[in-house]
Every structure is written in structure tokens, then in C-alpha cells.
Length: 116
Length: 110
Image (cartoon, rainbow over all chains, first blue to last red; front, top):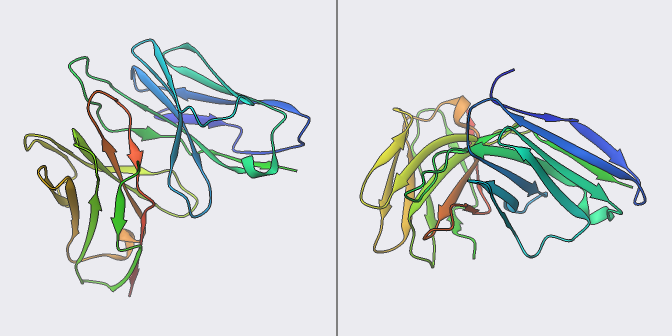
């Protein structure tokens, strides 16, 4: 496997289900990201794990919970979602320079989530 | 606050040129450009850093006006493969994260 992989590619879940999205990067990067992409909206940053720190967008509801067990793996745990959470969820990774600033981000293919 | 991209959409014939603009109200450390084709992941095109450093593909050119907090992406002699949605992402201060614009949909016709 190369680059950034995501599983599953498609997910349909009910509002009472609990599921997890998985992301793995094979690039040796030290930062990983979760983005939400809804139709006709810009990419929305949800969570960042970089240099062993976690940064989150304060507007993300608590029904989304990230987990980053190591620098190569990132999960997004989902529970009691709403229909408006249906979107493409993209994972990305990059190399953060300690002096400040990031390098280019490499995106995974995304998970198309539908909440019924 | 997200950067503003213009135009929202543009249609070209093969061989024509296009310019996509991105502007921010914040002081910027860097501007990133990505292209996303329908049903695919965004793909990196270029980074422009404060101070003039650039990194990206040879066939793509862009500019970064630090005083105006604006960047422009120049697509010359467009090819069918250039079709897609172009996003700029801006990085401010020490945030180490990108805020993306709403995208410019580029369609190149034969």
C-alpha cells in the first residue's frame, strides 16, 4: 500500500449506529487530518493530530470522536449521527516542520457516508 | 475565516488560458493549491510561502502577493485533463492547518 488509504469507501448507517472510519498513511508523515466535504461547501477541517498534539475545530459536534494511536493511523468514531452528517470524509497527512508551516497534504480517497 | 476564490466556475476550450484567484482577510504564512476531479481525492499542485519560496509541479505557475494576501493560479494552454475543482488553502501564523476556499470549477472542452 502506498500513500493514504481509507476504509470503508462507502458507509450507510442509521442514526442509532456506532461505526468507525479508518485512515492509514504510508508516507512517514507526522501530521494527520480529518476533513468533511459536503456538496457545494468548502473542505471543512475537523481534527488535526500533529507533533503529538491534537487540534480540533470547535464547531465539530461531540458525536464525532477522533483517535490517533500512532503517527500512521487515524480513526474517526461515529455515534448517533444526524442526516446532515452525510458527506465525504477525507483523511490527509503531511509533514509539519517544527520551525512552523506545513508541507503539502496528501489526501486519501475518502469515505462516502450516508446517514439514514 | 475561509479565503474567497474567484471565479466560482470557468469553461475553457483546449489551449486557452485561465486564472484562478484566492484572497484572504488574514495575514498569510502560505497558500496551497489543490485540484479535485469528480469522485477523487484532492491532489496537491503548489505551495507558495511567505518570502517567495515555491514548491510544486513544473507545469503549474502561481503568484503570492503577501501585502494583499492574495494568490493566483495560472493555467496556460489548458488540456482536457485540467478539468476539475481547484481549491486554495491558506495557512495563517502558527496554526499549521489549512482553511480552504469554496473552490473553482474548471471545465475544459475539446
